Image (tube, rainbow, N blue to C red):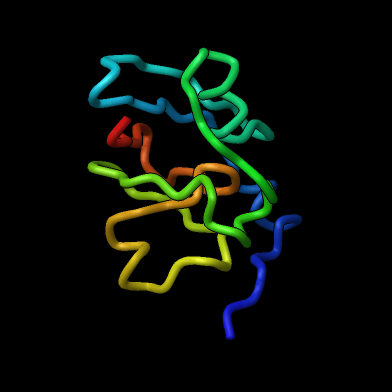
Length: 100
């Protein structure tokens, strides 16, 4: 059984990264403490969310490039190789490209 990540320690290591939307040709900064889901919705990108905790899988999106920091409990390791939950994931790399 997968468990929820320790968000307190995750917050300490957060950094600003750039979210690249491949199909939309947009680049959006994501600051520490911000979720990718919030940044996308504020930019007018349609995105369905439900739990906003990485449990339900509603916001799961395909990622194309970068090094995601998966913080969900809904995706298997195999699924995380190609997808992430934008409500709670971050990026270890300076940029993260999504198939949006």
